[in-house]
Image 1: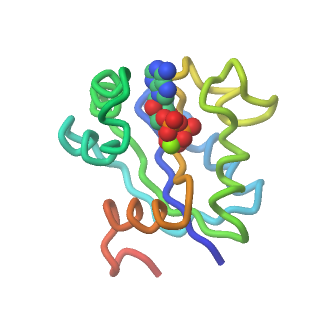
Image 2: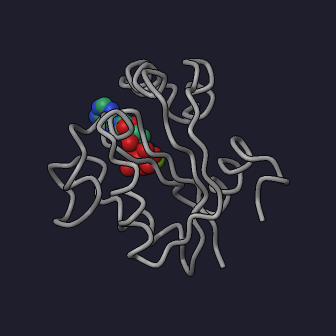
Length: 137
Ligand code: ATP
Ligand code: MG
């Protein structure tokens, strides 16, 4: 079975939505196999989002991701990467389908409640950015 890295972003932890978001994952058949609450520094957020370094929203994104605690988690299931992205909905909540996490909870295209890996290679790198081998069973 596949694994993917998910982040519940600061806008969502601030509004106490961790449980509601996790219920969406579990209802979709995704299993939360590792999870912890951390507060990223701006530098740590910057390294995580390095691929977006040249985008105009990069600085704002890193500020936001360091603005409060996040919950980083590993989700497991059949086709977990695609399934997670389906449950998250489109990046911009204006475009996300009804019932998705972003449709229900996101505040804006930037403060959009969740992150999910977009491919097997990025999932592997993102999981190892946050979790040591011994934290994963
Ligand atoms: P994520 O990578 O967080 O799962 P995504 O793959 O749907 O989301 P990306 O294009 O990878 O979206 O953008 C990464 C993140 O950067 C978005 O989730 C959002 O928080 C932020 N972002 C993207 N586009 C914009 C924008 N136009 N203005 C502000 N922030 C943005
Ligand atoms: Mg992305």
